[in-house]
Length: 288
Length: 288
Image 1 (spheres, rainbow over the protein chains, first blue to last red):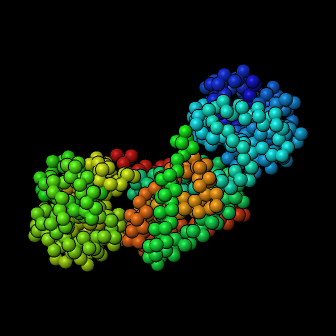
Image 2 (cartoon, helix red, strand yellow):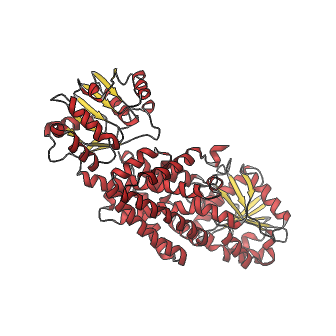
Image 3 (tube, chains in turn orange, purple):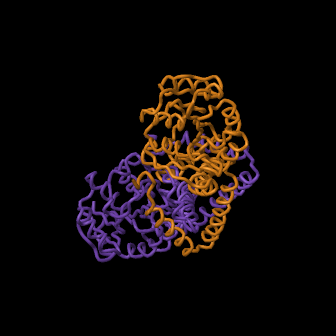
């Protein structure tokens, strides 16, 4: 198949690499607003052709993979729609889905049924196509959030392609997807950023940070993530994230009272519930 | 030297193991409310004598290491005081220091000058003396928080002993210690417990947890810590922890408004400050 990769970064590059390793790719074109990213992808043999526009990249493609930040997708979808071949399918790798579906609905026009929204639950801390790795999907999950208009043939085609990465592919409602990932991904990122910012804003903040140990390192590892990417994710999923944050803040209000009043029982109950659940939890990748 | 270990767990066992590896220990007695922990320490050759009381363990010791949960120290100090030899020194491994100093002041009596409060910034996730490891202090820090009454000879003796573990030993005011560790250790533990508890309390909580990925794993690793130990730490350091939690909640109030109102600038500024600080941060162990 001929692939067009729009947005040449770690996650899109990794998916293209996985498809290459599975022997699925006859040719790949790429487009990115950053010419350096495009050149790096060509250097690594991931793409055969550096396109000068979305439309040029898409013109010959059987499969279009949109891997830009979610905030840029509406404009990308509009350009994809203008050049898409009649049989081609479109998919994405966005971390939020209701927002991406809304952008697709607004901009893809007649091509909407051939768009299959996808979220691979995989990644690496290091951004950029130079860190692309086709093996990161192995044993992980990819969630598809098809809508009423989604063509059954396009859906099963994208599902089959994503299965070839070694991931388990499942389907879910976009709103449910966004609620779940607001809780287990977007909120922890916001909380981790917030802790480092709160400590760092204090007069002796940098000195204090120097005393962080292994627990601090783990808790704040995700605070080194891309600020712009996570700003966009938080905004794209603001309804569900806002709801989760509200519930979390209500629990913190109770824990503040427990700390202030020396209420051992409330602290113990909360910590015991959490420890029990966390000890029985295994990451999707660990469970396989 | 002859060591008495009161409270036979991972951290106390590790410190005793480090002293054994440095060739400092002629004999060690141990006491624990749990006879199984005591037997495990004897099986591993960490202690030579299983005492039947704190007083019995302490009677012949040159160095008394109190490694019980901080909530139990007052009672332990009272028993230590009743049996302590005139030249012996006492130290501890508690994660909070102002509270431990207050307990020592209330219970150690005339032995108070020979008590040197200590906090080794080292540990392992796995509790119990069977996970004791004398190497965990190497390249880490140990903080001493002596008080006005502390005897200079006792202080330099404990300082020298702790240096033999490979750790860098430094001195700090107990209240400052507690403020710093409220921020970089106690608060992150409370927040991590709270996230898992908040998600797990929802109707479909366990299903949602199943979708957590690598970021969730890192953020919540400390939520698998001992609920009782962390309940006691939060209570022992409630004044400083309460203050840090209040400041953090004020930042979350601002971030809630930013999410609800789609205020990209506030999210971006907070995330950028955090990412910059976290990327330049290196754990004390990494820095050496």
